[in-house]
Image 1: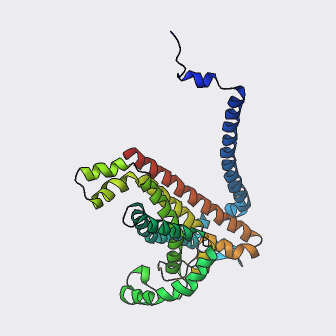
Image 2 (image 1 turned 135 degrees about the vertical axis):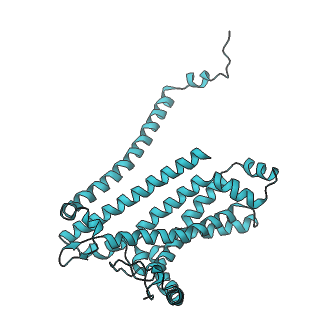
Image 3 (image 1 turned 60 degrees about the vertical axis):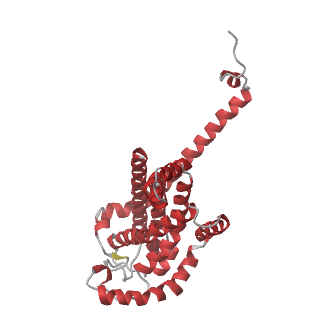
Length: 317
């Protein structure tokens, strides 16, 4: 029995030692890069934890539940700052998710000619290239004056709701969340659009062939099929929102007071670090490092939840 020259074993048998060594070296190189990223992250977390240890040993978990931040008396509690970080990020997501998903659907479907769609895709992606300080200046001179009358209206007619129980003072949680939503919009839009574009065309054709309308196909077939990628993009945007510094610092008001009103000034962990780290000394540096370590843990929790959600949705669809 003769062996066919086209059998699978022929290319492997004809490979030279140089090719095998190059393949082995490439695998080793990529493994080194992957381990290097993990080691860098571990080194960053370790250094921050070591620098934060004096505050951790002094305040313990009371640092998370206490609301007093007073460098003069060396009393530090990050409850209001942690709440401000979470509220700012989630309000921004509530604004950005419908806009981002709607934009992704509009750009992935043939609603407009291809040349116009290309220009719109470029403009959406260009939002990610704008420096955050420019967003902050735009928020100060455009967003705050624009939404201030709306804030007074919300307080006048819906002041019985805790979210609008105070009059707007200018900088605050609501304008910071709006600017942050615009900043994370390109992330949600780009990843959702890529997830929808990567779906096999047979899904759309089969749904339309069975008599479904275009909108039924989009919301009952395409979106569920791309849901894992969409959720991954949303969680990535959430992590980006939790760590945003300059634009939020310029707009949020930098108040360490705990308030349930979106119209009040607030603060985030990243803004606190940007404002106080340059002039901090002694225990204050350790407390700021503790706050940074809390932010790392929150980001890690967000990424773990994203991975669990994505895997669960992938298993379902």
